[in-house]
Amino acid sequence: MRSPSILRRPFRYDFHNATLVLIAVNVGVFLLTQVSPRFLVNLAMVPAYVVQGRIWLLFTYMFAHGGISHLFFNMLGLFFFGTHVERELGSKEFLLFYLLTGVLAGAFSFAAYAAAGAWVTFLIGASGAIYAVLLAFAALFPGSTIYVWGILPVRAPVLVLAYTGIEIASQLFSFRSGVAHLTHLAGFGFAYLYFLVRLGINPIRRFFPGNR
Image 1 (cartoon, rainbow, N blue to C red):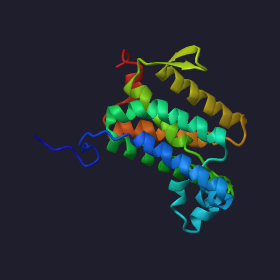
Image 2 (image 1 turned 90 degrees about the vertical axis):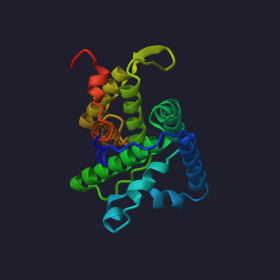
Image 3 (image 1 turned 180 degrees about the vertical axis):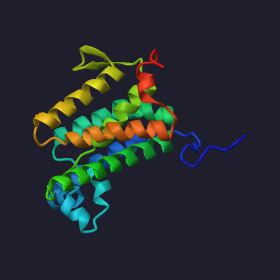
Image 4 (image 1 turned 60 degrees about the vertical axis):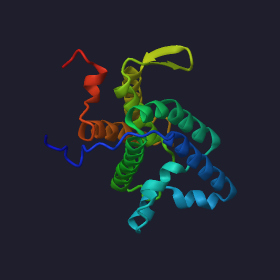
């Protein structure tokens, strides 16, 4: 039997609550930034700093948050969706997925900001990776129902498509200024590519199984 290519070579399945570790790291970093606000500046993805050689900012930005509500809602999404995705994929695969999509979303944002000449834009937050996890959840559990605001039942794939439309409209018409809409969309996009290239799964076919 032909062995799978390195891109699709699976990890040995294990589960060790990597989601909770990620949440703990995010909370820990947030507490540090509250003690020393300067620490936040040193973690943020700022295009001007990246071109000066601080490449690691494409990684560190996703562990920094600007306020308690920013942290809370990102970690809430990571907890509810990430735990299910991690159990399905295994901890190693989940960590690779989460960190890679987060870094790529940051890199895409860097390229977009640089192209626009926004060299001193500060990008922080795990939202790019969280949006990737949401798409992963919808692809792995397409029949699941999510209750928006705790009352409105919506199928997971429909929620992903709705969020995509909202983010595109917000970016085009400048709704919710100060929110990194491109980073959110990049999270969805790179999650889709990850499933397609790494896992051999087409999320769209999972969303709409009758359209093959």
